[in-house]
Length: 489
Image 1: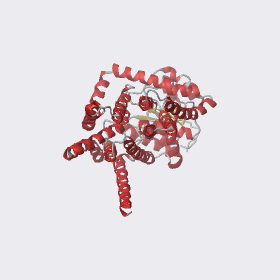
Image 2: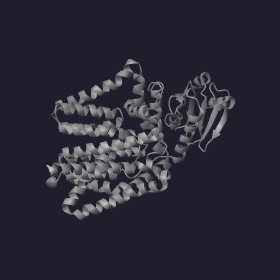
Image 3: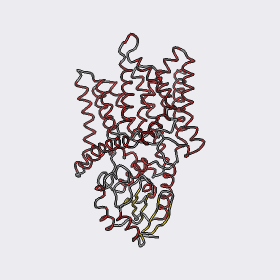
Image 4: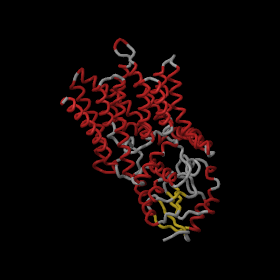
């Protein structure tokens, strides 16, 4: 009895230390200003809390369930960065719990499960994939992992549950579609019932999510966001990539940078898992074929849009952790020194970028699409408006940094979305804005001078020149206030 209690205490301590390690990895990022995506997610959540209807009054091409956690966090904790970043820590810890169970379900062994979750945590060290923030890829991951775990368990309830969890993942990030082949692999050729139960579970979530949009007439807007906008997004991404050689060189250079950190685990894992997929004497190994396919699909999902955003690559970390954990356990059995050496060398290269962040602070976050100067200024502008403006004031931001709305606490005016290079592809998207602006002019306007944004239309420049005065100037932004605002201190 005493041994059992001691064993449980050791297990609890191990998990607690793992949680502390995840928290330690994320500590340098806990209070840095919001990234562009965080700004959009928190801004949309704030507008929804103010009564705006998604896709009708406030727009983004992401699925509706992505914004729900941000709404809940803001309702409880407000709009500061810390709760959002701690939520990311919680999601990573949840991923380790599910991965641990999944590896054991694969019957790869208890020690392999521990090697897997340790590998997962170590793979979080580099800042490149923005693992400190709940991007869509991180938000959907526990549901996707849970759906694999249930599908591997089998049984009616498990397959229904797998369908439910997969659908939740899909309505957070549609790239969950890429992993449907894994469920088909588990179902097999002649087993129809599991597929029907999976569809039943998925349809129950789909109906629940879509019903509100059907009932109030927003279904076309919902479809446009989920299908048409994302289709355009992919098309524009590849056109941009192929038409801009400098961007191609940037993407290649970035992949070279991440190869320095992730190259050893990835190369060793791919060789190992491809060998193990058929085992000795070419014997088919179901679990390793599943994980190999999962890893390859995850890599493929990173390339689909043509934009190669760093946070896409987080999808690779869970399957890579399983494969690398399996490799380390296999190496340990053959030659313990080999496993130790590979672990030390891998951790060293993964650790270097993180140590730079610890040393240099936010300026050390490189190669991750985190723009320090613009993020700092966006926060400064938002907090400046939060102190100066009244709650009734309305704000229009001609910039990509939607977090200006979040920090200011002001309701968005005139536009329905933060501006970005993709949403501004055609002038037709902005028909009618002039009339809205003139009818109910915003009290404050922020104009970005960032050269990747389209120049404000002539009518907006005229309105600002005639009816606004420049309140303050930053390196990347100008803040204008109405000459005779409706509300003022």
